[in-house]
Amino acid sequence: MKKIIVMGSGYGSNFQAIYEYFKNKPVEILAVISDNPNAFILKRAQNCNIKAILINYKELGKEKYNEELLKTLISFEPFDLIVLAGYLRILPEFIVKRYFKKIVNIHPSLLPAFKGLNAIEKAFKYGVKVTGITIHWVNEEVDAGEIIEQVCIRIEENDTLESLEKKIHEIEHYYYPRVIEKILFEKL
Image: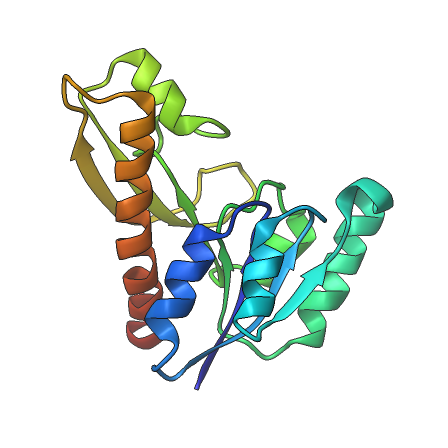
């Protein structure tokens, strides 16, 4: 049985896709961890009978938050993978080093283009004809880890920002669980 931890800060649709994909496979989601008390991902985890852990960044501040996060992660060892799914914090170097090549992230652009927040909007406003998603290992730099997989989509003439976001989320939900499965069972 492979064991993963999912971390997210928001709505949790990628978590839901991961949960649905793995629910009848030999993969256990040990916990969902969020920094945001209002993150719907916590409610989704509870609805799936998965431990939902809030470590409130705003209450604790950066240093204390990172210490609590490390303690929480250590409490679940051994596990195979930390899956970032809409997690909006930058992990501290000591966590990245401890779990190097055990933390995977999904980003809604073809990295190295449009790093950071609002990547779909940046790509749309810039006028690129092709965008997509990148699944990558996490390192000390934001959205700069080794690329595992990229999937491209065309931006059509009639696309709006909303229609592009919908397309990006659809390919995220399809590909992220499948790439996680490859990582877990084929050791990419």
